[in-house]
Amino acid sequence: MEGSFEEFVAAGGGRLLRTALLLTCDRAAAEDLVQDVLERAYVRWRSIEDPHAYTRTAMSRAVTDRWRRVARRPREVELQGWHGRAVPDGAADRAVRADVVDHLRKLPPRQRAVIVLRYFEDWSEERIAEELDVSRGTVKSQASKGLARLRELMGADEDEEAMSRW
Amino acid sequence: MVNEVEERLRREMAAAVQGVEAPVWLPAAARKGGRRRANRRRALLAAPATAAAVGAVGVASWGGWLRTGETSVVAPASSGALAPQPDVRTEAGPTAGPGGQEDLQEAARAAVAQAEALEAYFAAGYDYDDAVELGRLWNVEPGEAKSTAGAHLLAGEDLPFEPVEQPVEQPPAPADDRAPQREAFFAAGYTYDDAVELARAWNVDPWEAKALAGERLLAGETLPVQP
Image (spheres, helix red, strand yellow):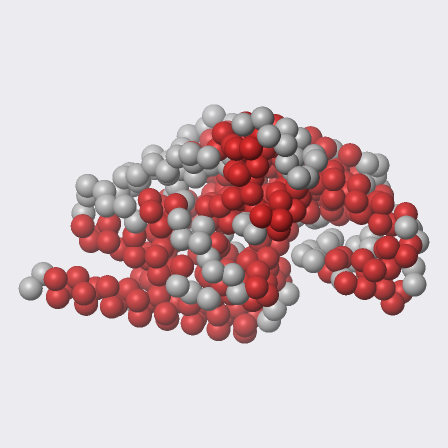
């Protein structure tokens, strides 16, 4: 049975870290978050029905609680540096990709968590509500606010890009 | 417009973390830290007064997500039932004995299989847009399509179409130039908890503490905390 924990980490650790990166927008914080959650999962391993759900939900809650409790300033390091780096392809695509993730960083942690679970993990609203133990209405409103904010930021970018062409 | 934003988000988030892999030390470090936590929990349960304090501060409430109908092994302070009524499954971590093992093992196997399938799916170059198309072909949700497609790939089977080429090429993730220090930290027997303790002492975050501690260890110095 111990092997299954390690196999889970070996097989799913990368994906878990990617989710953590989007939740924290910080490589160092993401690694710490993943390790912390995995250690907790180890202790409860035998009672965890769905390790995927457990780890992702635990990370989402930890991120939300972390910022709420200590109002810690999110460090802005690697992720920002490389995901927004210019690449030799269509300028519009490049700008959009860089901006969208940068905008994601600007969302409040709770909205970001819902957005990441919904659009990176492909969880349904019902599942997010169930796993995070909140109402579906809360999930919908958080997702809606997050999307609205992102749309607003994207729109501002597009306006800026249009202006720069003049 | 909303759909456009949603689709863009999916693409951009996937692209932003593409190629990010977990550090090699993660499985061993997580297991070691988990064992330490499990031992600490057992020690708390063996000392009712201490356990009561633990229950009072609600350590057991962290996270949640236990299986339906189960409770944490650390009972609420008000229950007065802190002397161990050990649920071996929750108390002893992955190495201990059993109860309802077959279902749990099956669930664990399924989780591992799903993780492997997802890794295979993305490693083969498929992405969310492909999952949408596969889901349409197979009449399932994109999330399920990814797992199913990954299982097919692991079985050496071809999917209905080749991955659609990414419109952009991702720059590589930056190298972690302090990885040797952090590996030295874990190689010396320290755990994440130690990093937290050192971080507190040095007024830095745990990630920084791991690197600083690793530097000192590599320089032959000792740390204020023993592994």
